[in-house]
Image (cartoon, rainbow, N blue to C red; front, side, top):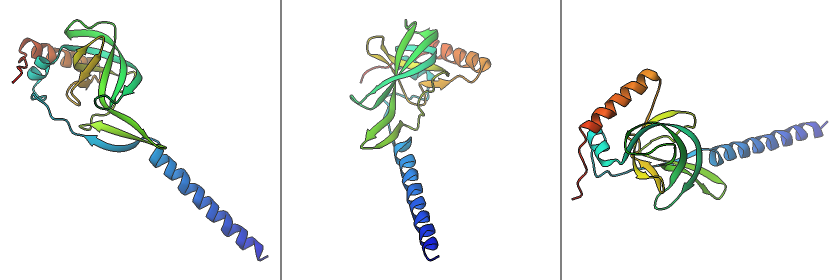
Length: 176
């Protein structure tokens, strides 16, 4: 009879250790938010006219899938985007859009770094993109301001009109 309490105690200790290990792996390996990268801008990104004036292409597109990532010169996550409608520029078809931030792997940990708190693009969703780039290098955008989620058809029309107006009134960027 003295063995039963010892067996139960050993079982509880092993169960607790396995639970702690599983929690550790979940918290530190899967989708751990590592940090926020702050970005300094040369323009007022909250002014649609300046943002569009700095951009090469403005378009509405559907995120198809994440296609990769790079660390040069900064951590970026790459997405395939199907352009639905172009507002500024000549981009058409499927393009690569590069978003600052993404997942980094350090030993067994996978951590998420976001630029200015801008969540990663979600495949299947439609966004209005204000970008700079080309088909060869891909298109990048200012976090939070250059990728606006389209909620529904009414939101689509409102954002489209908002950025058509900003394009008509754009303030071109002048290098100092």
